[in-house]
Length: 293
Image (tube, rainbow, N blue to C red; front, top):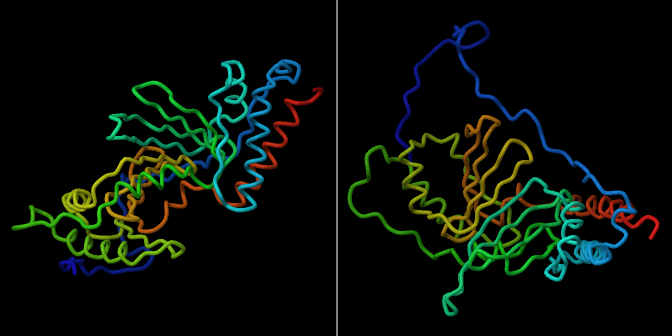
């Protein structure tokens, strides 16, 4: 499939290789983000914030139901006054994962963005939909990942990749057979099956190969960023069930570059155990702000 890669024959074993004193090793991520509880106000300071407390209780009930059946649920916040919204913002905080996607409703000539921010409680997401630059809806969604991201990615998917005619561009050699493998995988993948991961970092891919591959896969409307360990950038391709997942170290150098064929990448999703932990922690936060009421 690939051109032979010439490797010089050298001695191996301890002490057989002279090491350059100035050799610079790639830095790995130096830390992992862990749960940081929100800094909550004193209970007497938020006694009057009854609407915010009711919304947070509704989030907790939605989380209980989602843990029972796995179905995402939303709690609208559009009705909240600014002071109540501020309390909700304080309690939820900002977690590791954020996302941005665009939507359009061609028949009604409407379009806008969807901004998503995971709270400090994994699996509890703030989802704000804008239209014409102004917020149109504001809600909290509970679940592994907001459903709109998978829906938009599915809408972006075309059945076939564009075909290349004529000679390949300079330095493009290994991308075409790799694209054939990707197409075979996304055509056979079914929900519930394991994700098929292609590690481009380990393959002899030139920069031109990567560009050629990305051109044929296309880039969809969904962009996700995860800051759990280093940084991870996820985008959907314009073919079914296919994602570009790139990991960076703390200096923003690429340390892992992959194509994933399957469900939405797990690095962006909250696991069931995460939801259980969030239920306990959110309950503790609610107990605090409702103390004495």
